[in-house]
Image (tube, rainbow, N blue to C red; front, side, top):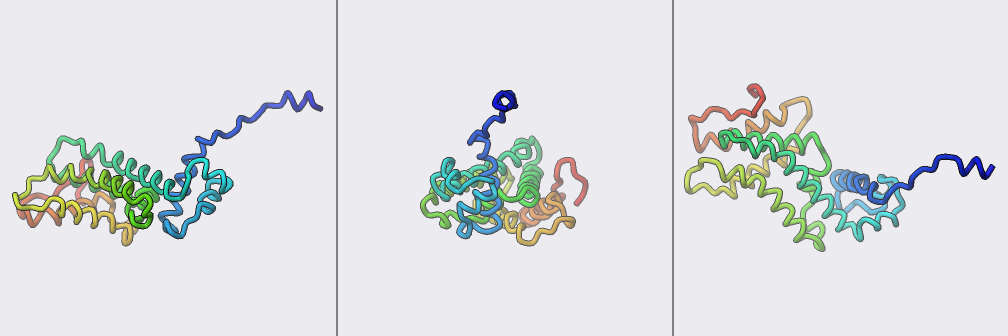
Length: 212
């Protein structure tokens, strides 16, 4: 019997690092659906399939875990809009494609982006400066697209950026899948911005898409 047991294949132990994506996914889901303040480390550990004490191997506190989820959310947003931002095209078209990419990630790729939008820095005062820095990094992505627009000299580009981001991010509350696509919504949002500045402009189009 001992010899038979010795000859049996051994299963390699699960490395702690391999649990990290599970932890982040679980935290993002709870923070986005239940709210940061109403989520416990025990909730997250249970969804990740680990003991609550084991969660502290990765993160010393819930605040540190929130920073990690925020950082991953910002990284995903930046990666989603990076191809559109790099396009050598009309600035209004580029902005439309950036908005479409952001909406696709926010509305169809779920929890991480919603944490960045819904969890305010003052919800976690201990790490608020770090969350603000991450949010500024996220907003800077849109600043690049806004700064390239041919706007009248007195245009407040920062206010324009914040107004556009507010419209995009609020779409989580009313968007219904199967109706207007993120691409169509992006065209309409940008057109609402562009028309007062250039009433004779054609409707901006999303690269590779048909009319909205």
